[in-house]
Image 1 (cartoon, rainbow, N blue to C red):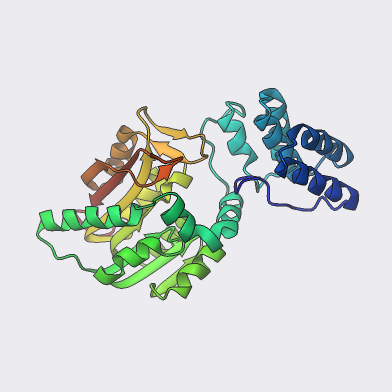
Image 2 (image 1 turned 90 degrees about the vertical axis):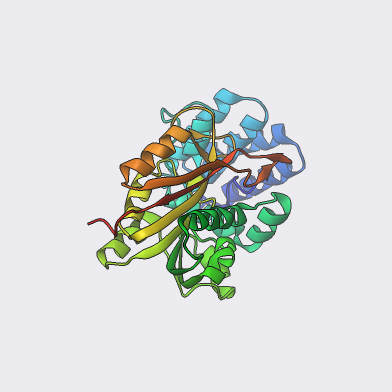
Amino acid sequence: MSDTGPLFVSSGDLIADRRYNAAIELASRGDFIAAADLLAQTVELTPNFATAWFALGAIRDRLGDRAGAVAAFERASGADPADYHGARLQLARLGAGGDAAPAMTETYVRRLFDQYAHRYDAALTEALSYRGPAILRDAVQAAMDVAGRPMHFASALDLGCGTGLAGAEFRPFVASLIGVDLSPAMVAKAASKGLYDRLVTADVAGFLADETAAGAEYQLVIAADVFVYVNDIAPIVAAVRRVLAAQGMLAFTVETHAGAGVKLLPTLRYAYGEAYLRRAIADAGLTLLDLSAAAIRTEKNLPVDGLVVVAISASGAAT
């Protein structure tokens, strides 16, 4: 199973757990039909076994059984309101479930990155040729050059800081660097690098609300490859505006698509249309400085369509 497949959560029934594990072993050997049959037996024994339902959905999808996959993912979603495995996203990908771009739950995102943290840096930089942080740094540098300002910031906030890949790019230009991420394992990796003056484990929206209440101000806020896990960035952009100092900058990267609005991609990442981004920036009271195409990473050896965005606050933090 892949990183977006089920991470085992016991059903509480020893026999069902053993059947599940045997089914996953069959799937790992390529025997998907036998695995699906065994999983069907497993969920008959334990109807609320969300992990097994999710695995059955994934295998049926692999076998080309869309209707069967949808039915299994619906049962997984019903048995797991926190959507630990991301069944709602799979339903949206299959064109079922009613919401074309449902929000990812905190539980799902935290699980995804906690299990990924130990090999995150190598996977992105080696396997996916990830260059988002460097692209983001260059875009901010270009904006500062146009403004005739030095590339130096008294305070910067790294939203969804992950293991600190973007922090490493911006640390030489920042006096005080703060990072926030939902995943404790990712924050632990970032802490081991000694890049940040403060690291917080929290969701971005909640953290920004707390910073606003505390009267915090930042000269720079960055988000490298973070909003691909957010189905509506407009509220976050508005919240960032409230913590930006006068002439403070927001810079971020996203994946994009040719249509309008927000789209959930087959990779279970969100892509944004240019018009949506321009509107989100303007509605937040920010001035757009740059919106440029950028191949931030590759997928199956092909560049992924992306954008780098830089915006500025004309005045100090909004109240």
